Amino acid sequence: MLSLRSKLVIWHTAIVALVLTAFAYAIYSYLSYGLIRIVDTSLRQWAERQASSINNTAEPSNQSSAPVIVPQLAQIIEVDGTVADQMTDPEGHTLPVDIQWLRHVADKGGTSFDTVEITKGEYVRVITYTVWDDHKHIDCYIRVGQSLAELRIAQSKFLWLFSWTMPLALALTVIGGYWLAHRAIAPVDKLTRAARQISEKNLQARVETQSTNDEIGRLADTFNEMIARLEQAFERQRQFTADASHELRTPLAVMRNDIEVALRRERAPEEYRRVLGSTLEENVRLSKLVEDLLTLARSDSGEVEIEHLPVALDKLTRELCEYASPMAGAKGLKLTAATVPVTVSGDSRRLKQLLLNLIDNAIKYTDMGSIELNLTADSDTARLNINDTGRGIAPDDLNRVFDRFFRHSHAASDEASGTGLGLAICKWIVQAHGGTISVASTTGSGTSFKIEIPLISAEQSEESANQAVSETEVRTSSSPAF
View 1 (cartoon, rainbow, N blue to C red):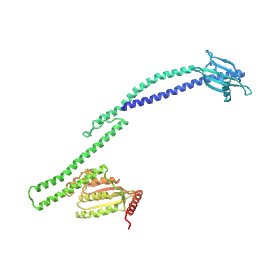
View 2: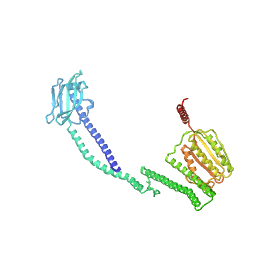
View 3: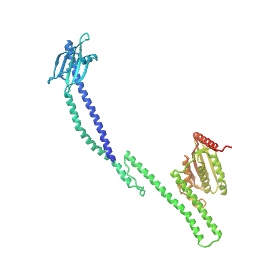
View 4: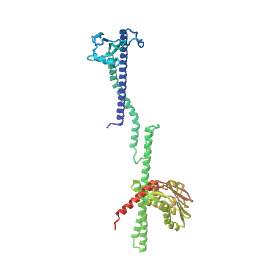
């Protein structure tokens, strides 16, 4: 298979050869046309001079200059086709006479230029000129001819010159093209060698960027940006694996330790119930962690399907507020919701999971005060704010709260312990609905989560209504008749 350098040289040479051929053809055609025009002009001047002599008239005013060349053949032909006078070339050649052709020329205007072959390989340029009398009758015909041998020689010399210069020009083109291709491909080869040295073990390495802002420089910058993204992805993967292993190891170690201690000697039934209760608690925590891990893993691979159906977000918010009120009341917190009618296109189950995670976090990290849910909307966006008066989040932790397995400093207590995956799942749910989620917090004063989700459009609402009608018709048609 040809290399890119070879392909560039071949294409460059082919284009240059095509351009040189077209250029040579244009010069050849222009040269031939120009020489033929010179011959035709001289032949016309000679024919008009002879016609003036026959008619005893003054020489035409536009023929003040002498002809450029002297013709080699000439004829004066009578109306009936008889040659009254003629001039032969040094070899004794004469022009053939065809009276029908002469009359045809007279009918078409009186003058005609033709190329005639008098012997094999020898051509003559001939003008046929009709001479008229005072009554516009044909007086005679004048034919003047000039050999095209000199023209053929000039054309042959040009072709000979082109046949010698063309290979030389193409050879220089190949050399120059190879040099240019080498200069153009050298930075790419350098990038290739540098890229081969980068592996998953040294993703910190980068290729050397070009100082110029050309295609190669932009390619190097783009490649470095891609390596940086891969490095971040590998780092997240390693961190995710390490964190998951740590989170899974902890409950397993606790359960193993409790069971081993319980089996060392006979114990009272109450002690066994305590061990089983502790094991069940760790098992529930482990199951929740595995479920969250599977959710995030499936969301990364695109296996989780999000429904896009009309969801009354205001109704869902009030229902979850009522559901979580007992948990908030147990800590002496006041949980309230202020909503306006809002309908979004989404998955009600995932949106419920989103709100429950955020409300649960607010309850965990609020020791006293209140939690408020405010749902508003403008022309195309629903906005939900979840504000609490809790412990807040440290400024250094704000940019990491949505990272997987991240738990800020307040999560150290057992009461507020968790897997560190809840907010990561919340972020995924919001993004899957085409929205955004952000957080603002002041340490010791509370935290505010802001969610923005697009409202359902008129087209989506109509489509959902039609789908509901279709499902109703299917259910009706499938119902047994009594």
